[in-house]
Image (tube, rainbow, N blue to C red):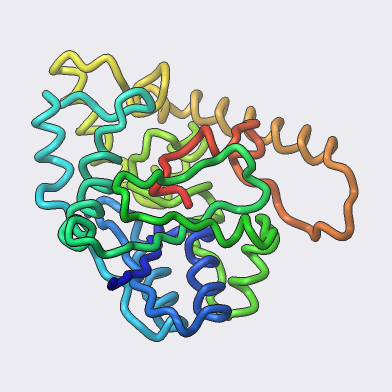
Length: 278
């Protein structure tokens, strides 16, 4: 019986580290690397994918949805996606992947999917198999690789981390609703055109009666007011100082800077789309 081995690349550090790890420890496997491209990802994500392809020595297949974000926004009456209604994940990420695999799965091919869940994410399940011929593997968890281990893998391979980690905690669309407010502020500075596009989507959604804004409790116009920006940045810095003061000294763990999710006390398993943020 024919088998396939696939590994989804999100544009984040964990899935990239898993790709490097599998390339180094299981070179006999003909792994197909893929990236589901919504057309709304950060430029830094595409730059990182090109760098990773250089190490892997093979292309990362781009899976494009049949219809883009604007189409599905209209289909959902211009209601924005939200943590309660993740239509973007379903229509732009999961569906294209399942359509890509469906003919082989239905023909009896066993598909081995390697998912980047670390050993320090005990409560995270990741993508669940939706077909009896799908086999899901969690190599990073199985061998005990945590966040520091992921970073070490990328550095030792010369791939490094995506540049956006200097201001953002995860990959995904420019207007991902899982962003913290400080990340929206930073998006407005790093990618002002993308921020303006998100504002226009939000205004159209509100005019159609959508109950959601991109950032909970306030519109982007409200969030970006100078006095509000100053407040968000002050709150973020206060959180950072409190966290750093509470962190125990552990020389064996290395000097890892806290992520934005750390600063807000968010469990990665609860704060992020299963496809994008890894």
